[in-house]
Image 1 (cartoon, rainbow, N blue to C red):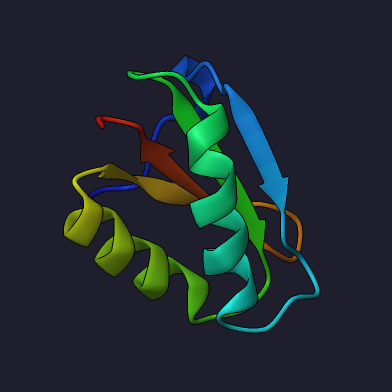
Image 2: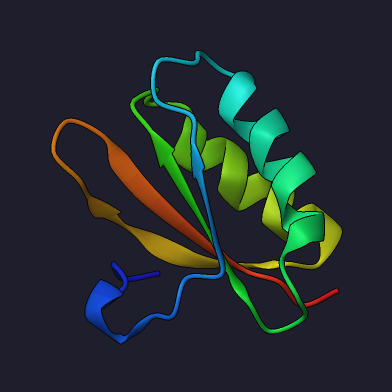
Length: 84
C-alpha cells in the first residue's frame, strides 16, 4: 500500500511507542485500538524498524485495515483504520 496522505486523515488516537522495542509498539496498538470507534484511525509512532511489519500482519489477522505510513522526525507514523 502506498504511503498515506496524512493531511487528509482525522486521527482518533495516537500511541507514542518511540523508544520501545518490538513487540512493545504492537502491544500498545492492540490496547489502544479499543479506544478508537469503528471507522476511526489509530496512529502509532515508532522508531523500531519492525513495527510497520508487525502492525501490517496484526491488522490483517484481526480484520483491521493497515492504511500505510509516513515519516516523522526520526520515527515512523503508522496508520490503522478500525473496522471491527
